[in-house]
Image (cartoon, rainbow, N blue to C red; front, side, top):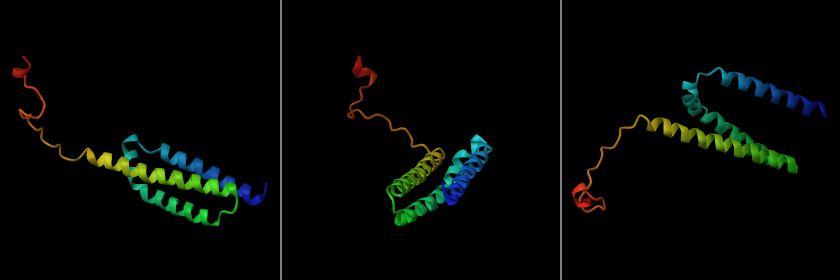
Length: 112
């Protein structure tokens, strides 16, 4: 193995360990707001993956940059979906609409 590859692999493993430790220390009640705020970070990761795809020159490089872009895109979309669901909990509920006689629902008198 080349020293550069070994150095990059070591940095990657350290980033995984630090990331795991940071995320595991966050209380469960803060995970959704944290994911909402992390959308910008995932957007930067997506841009970085696209930029790296431009300089890839081997099949392994193409596959890795595709996977990086795919996972970053999933994180961005998932973050916005979770944020939308979280904000949906605070929206006012629509009032219930009373059933009209001609909308296909039978009243108790007609069903007897």
